[in-house]
Image 1 (tube, helix red, strand yellow):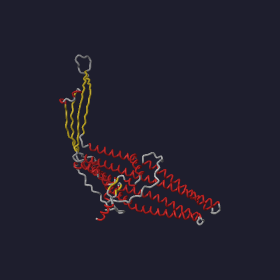
Image 2 (spheres, rainbow, N blue to C red):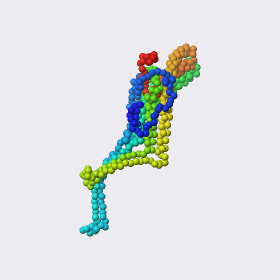
Image 3 (cartoon, helix red, strand yellow):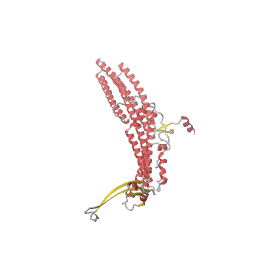
Image 4 (cartoon, one colour):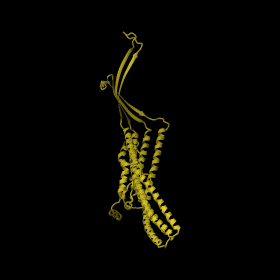
Length: 474
């Protein structure tokens, strides 16, 4: 992790060293259970792998204007400043002060020669320039441990920012897929509406001619109204999807964004690296690890509070009745001192504070394990369902072809009076259902791929086929 080179330098000066923190024991397989392939590079801008210029533009806009992302960036700056404050405690504090005073004293009751009842008055003006410094000697590493913890928290906040960036990109892509599905479903309903209107008109005409019964006319009208209801449903879904996407983009949710009517190019096969690589990629794992290290440092900080605190103080300055003589060395005064503070009795607060920090570290260890296990579960789930959704999409495409052929035959036989209208309506319903499911599965596959990228902490770059082939032969 990048933070190690920055903050572990502080450990060499700590008198109470941090405990060696090994990775919590996890039963992690050497390869993914759901799939096995190769990858070598982490691609931060994973959404570009969809090959859609519209997705690229939307994610770029969201990352640049999202208020939530700006808030996360502000938290990173706050963490940086807190670390800076913690580091400032290692340096001496120097204060300069300039004081001026004017004093008058009245001496009542004293005999004053040559005065008849007058009051003796004395006035004095004093100017004082002083320079004071104090410095706590960090004998036990208390301050350094606090600085280490603050720096680790700052790097964790930076990892959280990257996690928020990845999450926002994923939400944007998913909102785009939701809008794209809504528009495609609406277009399918529009097509089915034209077919249903033609069927209803034909059934009406045949009823008026006395060729077919009123039942068929009523069924055709009912089918037409159901499709009109679906039209309104997908209009509402489209309006909602538009506003959700606009919110993610930082725009006012006016429902003006159009969205796409076509899906991106077919998805590339999913490669997967070794599970151990996941630990260095996912921002939430990085952040959990850093907070665990920060917790260890705070235990050291709390333990150091049990030992004496030793401080040095020094001051120098001048005092003069004239402002212009404050820099005169003949008027200089100075003082040098030392301070030793050892807690004796405080109701057990300090030791309880140590135990509290140790309990918080135990919580951080458990949280770290939970984050890592959840990360592996997300990857395994995405890999396991990737192939299943692909097979479902393929089978739905075949079902659409068969249903369309069945509709053609049913319509032909109905025209010749060999089949009732019910057969035609059922064939139309099967075509409509298969097409709607096919569009929905396309959305699910894209969202599953988004979840896969989030689980990996980014995208993947597949190595050339010849390298993979050479490795397989070894």
